[in-house]
Length: 157
Ligand code: SF4
Image: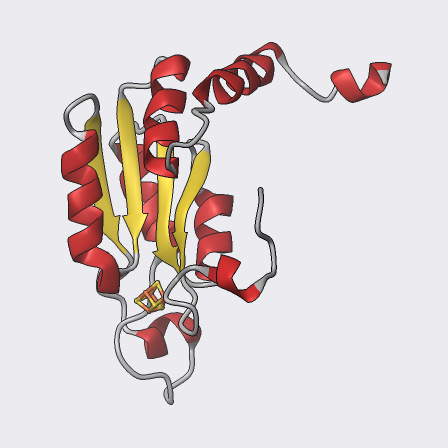
């Protein structure tokens, strides 16, 4: 048990405390996100969204803007042709750019980032490149209307 505790720095423990205080029984994840950020003393929040969820991302931005400075960036940021990025002439259209989203939010000194509807793999890349801690609000799931929970028979969490 002792060496498990050693896995956490002082700052990690502060984040764990804020997560504990951020729990609001019966409330939704957006409300818990707000509470977690407040408990962490966070002032600047970033949103990295899938471009197909632009409207919803802007709604979240407006909601969070009451209490925080909020920066959002969609996944086509930088407008890089997919064929060029991937070195494959058969790839059509603009590529997603999760590294560019992470860089944009880092340049705006966000202290907490929200992954918002990014695809599998693109979300992994964003999480890897993000300078600030990242929490996920929406995941891309084309079959289940972005609610993969429906895939499982979990009735109580
Ligand atoms: S690749 Fe994924 S994150 Fe990018 S636009 Fe398409 S669905 Fe959205």
